[in-house]
Length: 195
Picture (cartoon, rainbow, N blue to C red):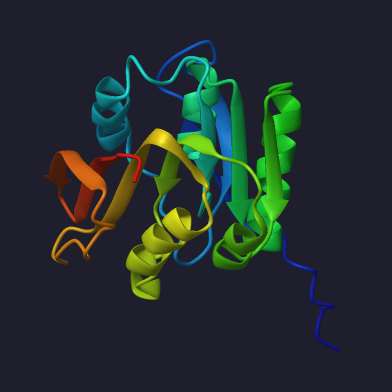
């Protein structure tokens, strides 16, 4: 008789917070298809760009995945971090990490990011958007952020996508501040000007 199949637990790896009060803390991250935590190198550049804007900011990590950008922001003094993640397994790991860090300023919702935006009532100062590369959701998510009043007047928006792809058209009141490429990643920082 073949042995009973054990219910497989999701594989987890580790990621390291690179700055702020939780610097060098290792957090479990689920390993699943389409989940690519933003690399240390890209995070370092991004948070250098954001240096004067993180403390006290209300942040939204829209396609949270590993949650590394949200945790990095909270570690550096963000007042609030809301993470949206569709995968139940990834969301469960994010909630465990929030608990283990005793991060009262953080919350995670298991939801489809686009659907969640349609019902959101809150404005954020900083939004991280790193949707799965194959989803091609970046452009529609940008416009939905505008339509749903999810952005404060001078909000900053971080965008990440495959480096070989051209950045989609952004809302006309968004100004591109910075952009770089690192290997297969293209990453950008835009600023919203109130209409």
